[in-house]
Length: 65
Image 1 (cartoon, rainbow, N blue to C red):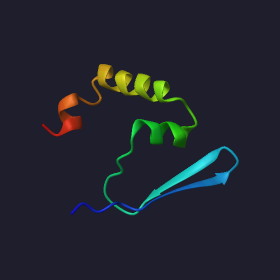
Image 2: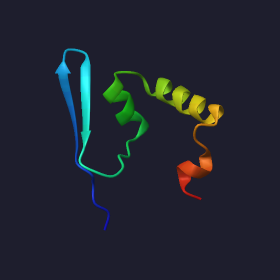
Image 3: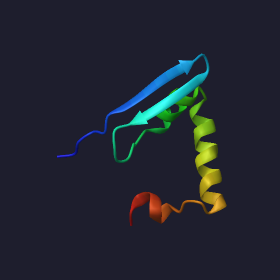
């Protein structure tokens, strides 16, 4: 059974956010990421593509294959 990692997203002052993760990894959908950062899903997609193009992360590392 998979357990969820507790995550807290706190607005410390207007426009400034703090993310606290108890331990482990945090997995979010594109729409959840967009909601956290206050952007459209298309902006999240564009940034993910840019990360892959830069070589900072590969599809293999992402999928675990």
